Length: 606
Ligand code: ADP
Ligand code: MG
Image (cartoon, rainbow, N blue to C red):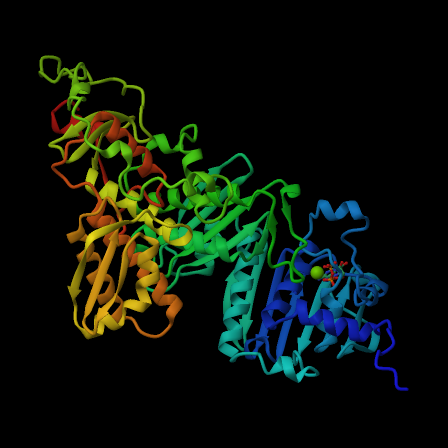
């Protein structure tokens, strides 16, 4: 009888390397990444990368690092040969970019590969030639100290992989992005990128990343730095507005290693979007420093992803940092309280939790009503303006030499000390720099917008059945779009369904919203939905924002609406937890400051 079960065999090295190459080497940019990391690990001061046809025909990386002696040059091509770690314990404290000992043999298994290296030029160097994983030759060769690795015809022996390579332009873009990551992580090393006979990057060694960003990207004339510290780590960031359209690009460095993180990219993009329209095509660099034991770099064969021990805290920290970057870059009033003593730490963490953390999910799921912050209901007991008592500043003009109000009162909100409400429409505060004015409608709109987006992501909103369902005649086109948005609407508490060929029935609404306002929201959303076609996920994402904007505008407290002191404070506390307390979802400013200096100058006190 024939055996159906094949015998188990140990795979040959060359087969193993080709399998590993499948994980480590995806495209030319993966080769660039691995070789450049090796050069950095070898303490190179200058790294030159040359590509032909986007790297499809050639990737050559030349460095002036420590080089290898001829024996090591051969050994380096063995699988799991590495000079970087030696014991199990080392894996917990990886201080180099490489450690798996897989890159060189993997790359050599799927290309025509030459390594030319010398550790001590006076003793001579070595050239090793490999084709599809077979060593064709190893010979003495001369070169200055350092290493050159040449990788030609990637995947020449794996046609299935070669088929997946994209156009030279696309591959070049990936390679360039990869090199940007390394170059931003190491501004102290010079980087050159050549494609054919064009020099795309020529970045000399510089002192800091913002200088480096300007060398890499000529568009980056205005680079804003930002930073934030938290319990678990520290972020230094750069933000260069793109001044245009398109998705912003994020370079994320974790302990000096460029990595990808889809969730984090999403979080940063949301913060930027919250910042209004000024960040199309922007560049963000985030340099995150964490204790090595709180991040695992060994979770991805190409070391392109990492795992955080405290992901929720990391996200909150980064979001907070980017928010500050956005605010700083827009030149909004810099609210000093935001920087001091991190009073908003908890609330920002809460914010991040909607997406990422277990932290306060319980609190969110507990279901604060979507609109009515309990504290925004008018409380007639509290007389408006009561706190203005005793705050009168001597402005009589009898003491022109005397500076007014030497010190601001102690802050009782995240934005400073609350003075009160002006004309039932604006909140007035004082902070260390002057008089702060908050538009209550726009502020509440911002709060609701963030809250609704979170709901859409994660929860069910309270909803209230209407005794008499509302019938909206909106025409056939809009009615036909109902199925596209039904689910999104339900998640914010609106129950809408097709009633007739051109009629929609709305049977439940969020309890806090006037039914007429709901009509308008439904109409707006359907109008949007009919305008968007194709790509359903994109439509859903855009529609989510649309719904949030529309609902928050209709649901927000209006101007000419009296708020108690307690309500005013609650609104400010909510505002500071939003993605951008300075701009409404449509880009309108929320907060204004009249500086002490300006006030005094205009009153002739300076
Ligand atoms: P890893 O980087 O994980 O150690 P690699 O396969 O990338 O594994 O490289 C294997 C070894 O070859 C490295 O540990 C290092 O000792 C040596 N090596 C690779 N590239 C260079 C280089 N550019 N300069 C000096 N040594 C290198
Ligand atoms: Mg390596």
